[in-house]
Length: 323
Image (cartoon, rainbow, N blue to C red):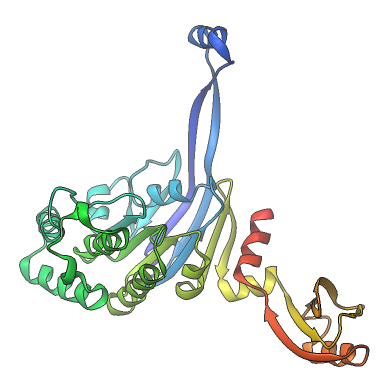
């Protein structure tokens, strides 16, 4: 059984449309015209236990709205979300006991308390017994080194330290599902490394299922084998990252360094970049091999060095967004 099942999930918002100026405002009071915004439209997918899934899309695509419906924060207009077989709306109290949620720009820590006191407060809220609490704190300290900042007031923590605290807070009650919304936003290299390490380790040690929304391609490349892409609230792509790259961007790039600045064309490759004595050729893998292309080009011009670049994940995402 899938840990998460999303079935025909839809979220509509109704806004009052009014004309500009005082006249428009008065007119809308007498007779208002409503407009329906379709934030999420008929989404369906399932996520298995232990998966780390990137759930992405451009700004305004409906990512955060979907995550909030999946975690029970928002009520869908239509459709349902099942978490471990339970409806997230009908069994909200029971479902949220098995969820961890971290929003990159919002904290569940109490700013008026020390970090450790915030954890103690969450211990009582989630009714975590002392033994389990201590075990989880030990695991969190091994992964994130949380005890070195545990006595600092939350308001004095840096962004990276606060994010570490939020991750611990989300995992104290041992949830089987963890929702992360932009967890590395605004962090430096060290901060991003710590968060990515945490996600990998918590998935390995506890088998936690992770749903990650992010604009950071590094997060996706390092953590996720599966990618779900939405745009305008509609499911665009869903599948293994490697297969998606192969299908959406089935090409490679040959980077050629020349002894001079004279390049030549090729009937099965596109010369799409030329800067000085460096030329870049994009070619379809099904039409010609890199070895054959190098052989053909070397017969026509003086080549000093070559390199082959695979299609990048940002190429795939950019193409998917345009579909």
